[in-house]
Length: 507
Image (tube, rainbow, N blue to C red; front, top):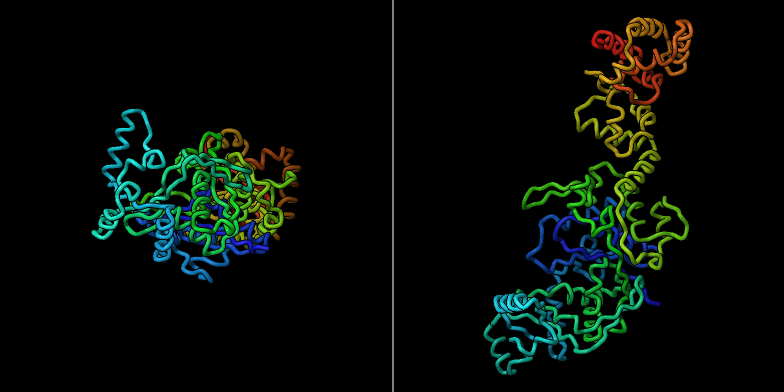
C-alpha cells in the first residue's frame, strides 16, 4: 500500500490567508489520521513576487495553530532542499526532456509582440491564447527550422519553454471531492514551463517536486482546479502517470454574505481579521490584523476553520485537534463554497477561552496589564479571572471586563446616575459604609449578610442599595456580583470608592 505523503506548498508572497491555513489544516488532519507524513515546501519560483519575511510568517502562523510537520524547509528531511529556489538545477533536465520528446517547445516571442497580439484580439472582442490554434503562426521552434532554433539558442536569444497541449483531446481529472472532471484541450493554452530567467514556473516545479518527494495526495484550494488538467498531462508526458497523486480541490472560503471569495478587504470593511497573525507589509508598512493579536486562542481558530468546508455526520461543532484527526475524511468535504461567519468565530473563542484553566487566564491578564502599565500587586488575579471568564469573548475582554478592579472610577455613567441616584442615596450609602467598616472578615458571606441585614433594618429594597453601590465601585451598571467585587477590592478600597462616589456624584 502506498505511503500517505501530503504537502502544504505556499508561496512567500505575503501573509497567509485563512484559506491557506485551512488547506494546511486539512492536509495535516489527513496525514495524521492516515499515519502518513506532512511536508512544508516553499514554492518561491516567482522571484518577482517574493516578499521578505513571508516565509517566516507562514511558519510562525502554523506553529501558533498547532499544525506540525514531519519534513520541511525549517526541519529538513530525506528530500531536502524544500525551498524551490534551492532546487533550481533539478527542473531544467525535465524541461529539456519534454522538449526532446516533443511535448514542449522553445518560444522566442517577445513580451512586446505578445502584448500587441493581445491588443489586436481585444480590438476584435476576442481573447488571445497561445495554444493549439495559434502556435503555428508564432515565433517558436515549431514554426522555424531546427538550424535557426539552434542558432537562437546558441546566441543567447531570450526564450521560454511551453508545454505542447494536444489538439482535440478530452483530458480527465479524478478528484476526491468533485468526482470526474473533464476538460477539452482546446480550452487550454500552452503554459510556460520554464522562464527566460532560468526558473521553472509553478506548474513544472510543482509536478516535479511532488513526484520526487513521493507525494501521494494533493489537497489544495479550488483555485488550482483549472491547472489540474495541465498537471495530469505533465505526469503523462514525463512518464510518471502511474505515480500521479490523488487530487482533492477544496471549496472556496466565501464572504459572510456568500457573494464571492473572502478577501482582506472584506475583513477591513466588516472588522475582522483574515490572517492568523498580524502582518506588517515590508514595502508599505501597512498593518493587517491577525487572530492571535485580536485575542483568539488557537483551539478556537482551528475548530472554526475545520468546519468551513468539512462536516462530520452528526451536528457536532466542538472538536479538539485529536477529535478532528479521528473524524476527518476528505469524502465529507463539500463541493460548494463555505461562508465565513465572524460572529461564529467569536462564539468558538468564547467557548474555548471560558473553559481554560484559571492559571492560563491569569497569564493572559498579566500580559494585558503589563502592556498597559497597570499594577496588579494588591489584587487576586485568579479570583478576578474566575469572576469575568464567562464575560470574555476575546482575550482583551479579560481586562476590559475587570479594569475597574485595578483602576477606580474617574467618572460615572450619566444614564446610570440618572436612574440609580436619588435624593436618599447618599444617606443609604453612608449607612452602608458604617456597616461594612464593622465587618471583620471582609469576604463574600460576611459582606452579603451585613448588606442584607442593613437593607432589612432600613426597610428599603435591595435595588436602592445595590445599584448606587455598584455605581460607586465600578462606575457603570456592569460587572459581576457586588459582594464578589467588594471582597476582591478589600474593605479599605471599597470604603474609599463609596466615599469618592458620595463626593463626586451630584444630581
